[in-house]
Amino acid sequence: MIQFYLLSVVFLVLSAGLLLVDRYGTSFLFLINLKTFYNSKKAVKITFISLGLLIALAVIFFPVSPGPIILGDILPAANIVLILIYLLRNFSKAESIADFNNGKRNALGFITLGVALIHFLFPWIVVV
Image (cartoon, rainbow, N blue to C red; front, side, top):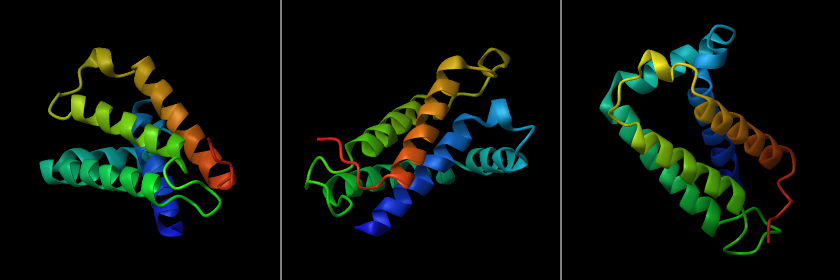
């Protein structure tokens, strides 16, 4: 279904923004607002993680039309699951100064942005 395709792209871009806020927050103030909103309440974090899980399941079981039933959009779904694992591991942790410019988090953010870009520009490419 095309709705889940659009939701997955939006979720990937927002997640990449959350991951790259420390690196590009001074250039893109929207990222600082996004992180502030995400950290404002525990319910926002739980909702974001729950929506990510639902979107990952929906992308797997309802791929874009030329794709196979189960393996349709496996790359975006796997990336969403990796993001969810990262967010769950850092759910209640407070950021320290040492974590300000975390290379692994930045790499995950760039990979997520790349997957979102590829998924948006080439929706008919299917990993089989």
